Length: 238
Image (cartoon, rainbow, N blue to C red; front, side):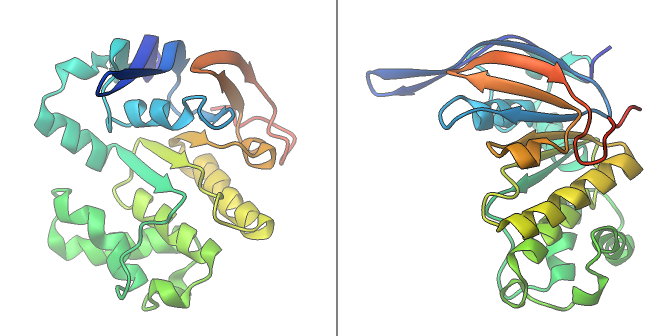
């Protein structure tokens, strides 16, 4: 049974009298532990699909099941809990708090997690260690490179041990060398921890870290293929 099941998914945005249909009947399954890249040109619906999968938006039509329950079966409180406990989000813009240390930034999701406060620092330090930034604990974002900022964002996404990591153009603001370091970090964490990773990207070199590539065009699935990871020569088979 798939972790995520999407059937005939539709999303239409209404702006006064203008309706814009962004997703047009998306159907796909995503297995637990899979590393999936979703590609497509601007306006193809990539980020909209990620927002629906991540419980940030609701579909206009069709169905989405996560963990064998449709999105409509989750209460508002359950949606908030799933987003905080089971999902981790990495965005292009980092979204780090300025004038706040790396350690404090990574602790933030724990405020609403139910984890006992005395464990927050230990859990945050473990997440920071996973991304290789233990030597930057007391640094503020202004003291970090772009690649380091994104690795802090990855640590923050990991701190609650999420089942699924959503990465929306995580290398979009980085040069190619920093982008590769970020993708190598995500790949290493996926291989070691077994999280499901859903990556949104328009960059071929970034998608090459995945084991499956879904291409969207004009709100529809154009292709859906499993691929050997071109960076290692093999797929991450669980």
